[in-house]
Image (cartoon, rainbow, N blue to C red; front, side):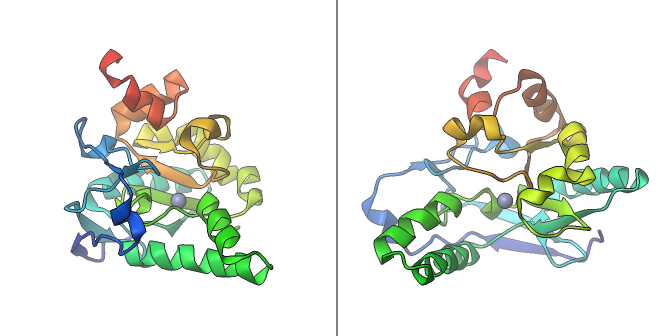
Length: 218
Ligand code: ZN
């Protein structure tokens, strides 16, 4: 991974029906690296992120780049090849991904309403994706760059599950926390929270929602 450039970017609010619907704005009260974004906590409309571009064109928040590089170097030293399949996304990109998924379901014969409902089970609505923060990376094996069930069986994912916390990254949606995160199967989605928090989250066996909720106790 190479540092190619830094791009300043202001998130643009999605032009959706969201204006008619109350939603909570994600708070950064515990610091930028612990901001909780999910379907109930939207990215603040004044959120800004300074980005660093990776050698494959993906971008991440510049503050997490050194740790990401460190993690990739450590994996490489053990003969493993990690690949960032997806990093920072704009609200527009997120909207396009959602629309693509809705179309795919419609092509399978679902009604517009059903297709939208099903698509939203898999793709976050713009404003609710951690990828818009630049703090989330979808990491796959170089040998298998598809985001599919095979990822879980790669040596790279096994290594990440064991070691990512050392570099400040957590597996964001563990399968056993689906009932809390409301996100299904995503073994490739890692979220930067910083080394201190990643270690605690790993030790406690909690997901980010639980960690933030009980933050004052730690
Ligand atoms: Zn992801």
